[in-house]
Amino acid sequence: GQAALDVQGTIEGSDVTVDTDAVGGTGTLSSGGSTAGSASVESYNGGSITADSLTISSQGDRDTGSVTIDDGANCDCSLGTIAAGDLTLLAASDLNVPTIGDNITASGTVRLNTKGNLTFADINSGTLIFEVDGNVTGGDIDVADQAIGEAGGAIVLGNITTQVPPPPGDIIFTVGIVSNTSITVGDVSSPGAVGFATNGTLTTGNISAGDLFMALVGGDISLGSVATASDGNVYIGDS
Image 1 (cartoon, one colour):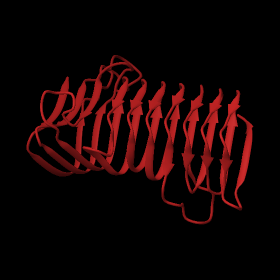
Image 2: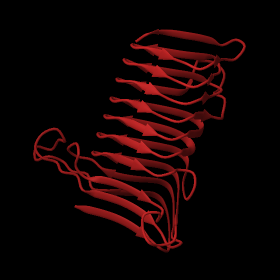
Image 3: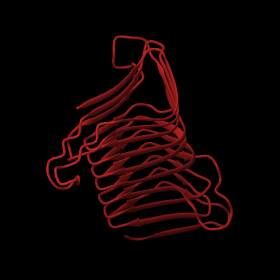
């Protein structure tokens, strides 16, 4: 099936959800056929969508259905805007996410979850969390609080920046990236702990962390310069 929210006027809401989730015949996603549909939210020709939280979901068997969020850049029309507090995209197939922080904004948490591969442009938000079965290819990440992500496949990202120092006390990872395959990122700057874990190789640019930089790596490691707070620590070990 298909569920679409196409806006050329104005929509304001608290919690907005567009979903085409599918459940198999026995009531689970893992048993029986569960073919997800197409779920999309688009704002164009000066349209405006504002929501405290926006969820677009197409969950089912892997490689079925699709999730789309668009500001009109892919049509022969003028652009619109989408402004969410929290933005959640849940997909069973490959997920492609446009720039977050321009015409599409999320002041809170951006949560990206897919059974396929994830591709995203630059993301500027409060927090970024992704959980991906496949590969991740992303642009620059510039968030207020945390950038946290996990993938079964390879992760390739641009620069990662977080802005807000975590509260004092326990070590809090403001950047934490985990891959079963490999991790490649650009420069990383964060006032909290920065951590990477992979069974494969780790390649980074320059690292500026707070109280801890930690790398748990099963393969080769290639790092730029590494700096922490004056009382910070660096730990590099085998995954």
